[in-house]
Image (cartoon, helix red, strand yellow):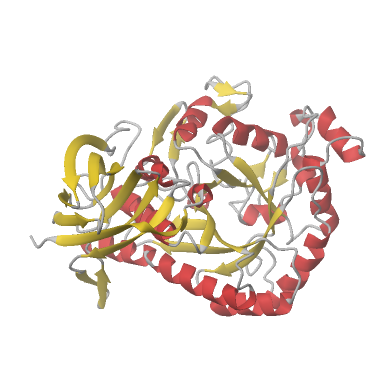
Length: 494
């Protein structure tokens, strides 16, 4: 086993790691909202005003900074007035995007704000550009944020919320290159200018308006959008989407497919670097933040589940994808300001799965729990020197780093998170801090002997992290990273 090197530069900061890089996304899709978040006040499942108590408690533990809602594709056919007022009187609509399910609208604006408050997240509302109007979105902002005295603010008060919600983050449409209207970038830029003109900063809530960015890494969409936008300045964020897809299925894959999916997840780094470079050509002061408000794995439909509802299991492989992606965000803390994994409960790369009264947390959830120590810290420049892993899939070479990760500090406290993607080999590494000394006190490790390991309702803690006390000290220390693992080392700079 060759020794690898990890060189951390404790006095060279890339930038502050925005907590918003650890954001989440919940859409009216399958059982993400209904059954996952919302069960209704009359449910025998313990709830807080209709919101599942166990889901609230689990999410609070990982400190979600922001939650995006109501979509996704659902957002551009959602009319917010359907989700306010007495629940028994709310209209029932067909969800045209996700299986033509009947949307009862019991979970609307007030319920979403309550959910955000319960879990400690800021609300991020995605508005309807595809089938909506500037007036509709403008009125939603007034309903949420204007203090009192107007018909809309008084209606909010009559619906149980006298104080304004103070929603800062507003998306002006979603995937407007596709399900949000199939716009060309120039046409969407025109619509963005029209809609955003009427979205105002009421009272003490300055809005942060987020434009739709490209699907995956499409620099040309970005270039054409900003060219057409010209010098218009009522824009604060620009949001790309990236799903690394799948290789095999959620729970059945070969070692080669294990490597293939992790390699695909690493393309997030190219997206961030290239998208920020294009944006810098129009916005050299980086006044407009780069956002990735949908990302994650997307596996084939799970047998026995409605294929249109995107329910999928979540294995150790998904955990490594999540960790490697969060490390990319940390390392590029100067380039990306928010990210929202898809999705929070029961859909795609979920934190939580529910089934009736039962609930479990997934391996991806545990990564978010382990990595929350990075939130708000200073990202440090770090270099990994390890032999590449090589494999192949469908006749194409797969090559990925033998070790990867990120480092941060908060005062004298420092954190090193490391992914060892090798399916069978541990990696011994020398951790070096030029010109400094450290003490490493704890190692939190997520791994399993079975690459396909996942948590089920009968075995909800099969994959969970272990914590070990350490006593490593010096300007160079050695540590061996388990195969197929995510490790977080915490300590102090001396």
